[in-house]
Length: 89
Image 1 (cartoon, rainbow, N blue to C red):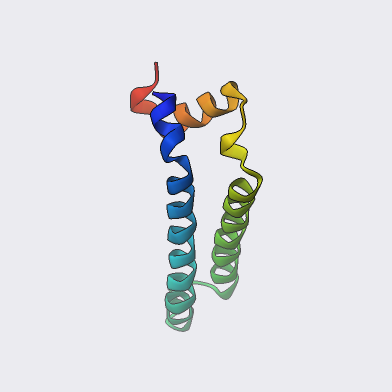
Image 2: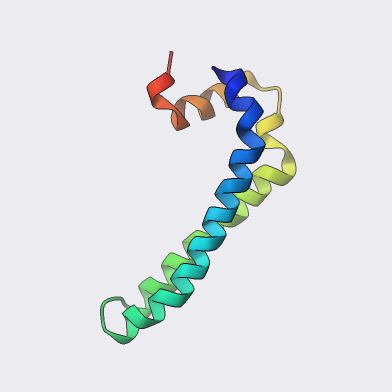
């Protein structure tokens, strides 16, 4: 199971990065309207976008450092089990 996951991990991290980038663009477009209509506070708007930016930074660090390619089987097993609970042994 882990080997199948390992072969796809780079593609998955790239997809996650692209997804977060889309989400940040979406929030930057939508949140000002929500703030203007009183549906969201300015603070919440900034906080939510900041959180997504921090997630993006973390994903870039994971990608650039090759974290998922490390030989530490325990780390890879933990990541696999937490992202694919239905396949947990």
